[in-house]
Length: 385
Image (cartoon, rainbow, N blue to C red):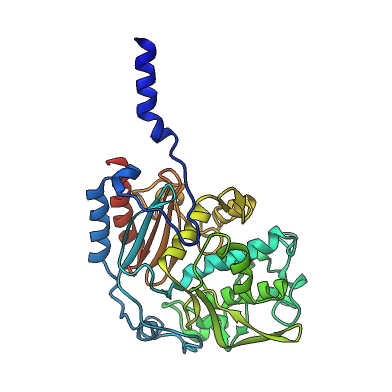
């Protein structure tokens, strides 16, 4: 009688115990109903409804949205492509299968600064292959020319660029470093003339410096970064052939006698990654699994560990654009170990290791408070709380 009872109990819990992440093939991604993945369907619908009721208030014409967002910037003219966006769109993946999708998940849209996470991944691939010896090496030892040659810029390391703590000084693709998101409480003239901080001591979100990282990575790889990303990440995870990674009209450089476009790290000034929600979810599944995809380590676990390490001057930021829930301050409804890739729009890839959930949320109102509202409802679907 006892053995029969034991067998009955084991069989009843076996499906849950054996539930492990499956990885989609290029042309086949399994779908299940939320309840089949242990999620409350009503709570999932509440999360989706919350997203739809909190659509971004910015114009869908992203050229107009860009001009409005950066109206106070000098040198703010776009140099790369911009295009109108689609409807509020999302995908929820649990245990590697899609349990909900809404909007236009196949539509290729700008993903803005989620691009930065693809960029830091390409730098990680260079490190994994020995093209970069140490993230604490000075970038000047890898990149010829004037950008890191002397003075303040000569001590900047790869880690400084990846964490946005370099405070690099200069102009790239006609954009001065000071022109990007200048402080609202300081006159331009005073800000331009300020003394730059010692690298590593201050954090400043700055796309000119992000684009400098892309230029430096191009010098190391000596081939177009989209090709690197496609070969080592996007093809292995089964991404579509519809994503595109753009730079600026004037960001073409000579690499070994061939003109190559240095890509941008976001949609500031246009360009960046144009991608659909399915491919974003695949990338999220890769980072949730710490760089491992279906038994193969595509991006080293060491790199992912560094990417998830808090940055001194901003402990809620890892490598670009790996945002952390340090101290549960950004997302109080989630544990401290969740992380997320974020871009303007807002475009978000939310990763929840405890619940084995990837959520792509596109064109939701920006801000941690709004994201927390979505996450609260999403987690309630899994935890009942």
